[in-house]
Image (cartoon, rainbow, N blue to C red; front, side):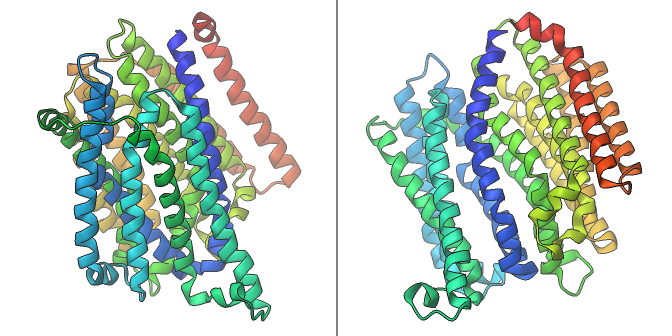
Length: 487
């Protein structure tokens, strides 16, 4: 089980860069919600949701395809790298040119007055897509330290520029200053400043990653590209449907919610969505390490046993995060401005939905290592259809609560469909008895916390802290034998 240790070690390093970086970005949420307000924050949420979908579309599964082909001994690593790069660069340039030509249509879509916002949006997407394969190269080469340093550099630049524009320049402007920095800030351009910070961060990251590719002198192989596309395009459909499933609620809320200020309702939902960030961070850092790990161990005779153990640990840590956030939600709520806190009730639902999504990702290894990605398409498209239908039905009736419920139901059905298909093609014997126990215990403790929530703060926090420690202790005792076997 030394491979589990290796995965854990790399997860910690990737997690340090991802979790620390996103946590630092997360600290911008109080600033953004305070300075932007519900309307501009709603617009920002709408823009970034569209960005997330386009990033999947423009990388079209090539990152996963790169992992798959670069890990094969019979393939030429340089050709795999070069073919991936040249393909991504070509399609990104096409997107860049077409989007600039269609700038007015983008501006109408986002409902923004400034065309500059659209330009920032286009450039951010293009640079982030171009950065995808160089970052993937660092992961397949098992160079997590360099990955971490570059990621954190970009994040610090983004945070620093946000603080520069939204605190320093804003304070100087509001105090009546007449210098250059004071004149630089205008409240109506507050959304521009957030996107400019993101753009500069992405551009500097691109410049730092460039030598990593140039020094390798990658080459292109058209026949290899056809094989990679054959593998990657189903991944595109899976990723696109998955991201669509994840973001469509934020795109539908302004259009379907029954409220006189729909974009403000999106701002409230988007801000409370951020409170599920710990779960998102955990899933993301696991994903960075797990995907190459899963592929590299696919031919291991104990691979299925390995995958089952990983799933067990993933669920335990995911439930610890769920309990931690819900137990201390009355403290975490201060990370968003007061006018956004009316949406706190959706946070537990979003946390569980995200946890189920993480389980779905871990389970998805069955169709990736067997090259049966067409089944992944079935799972993802099923989820996307269910999400759209439920949002259309629920949003006009119960508001953004309907979007949270739709995500939970959709991911749950996707999980059932995926596992049902895996039974025939790549059965992994997960320990459902343990998994059911952990979920039952966690939900039971969550229910107790709700019953005592109105008690004295000192009593409440003492009880929930004991319950959280108790859950961790019980999980450790149950898993102790497996842990010792790994040693």
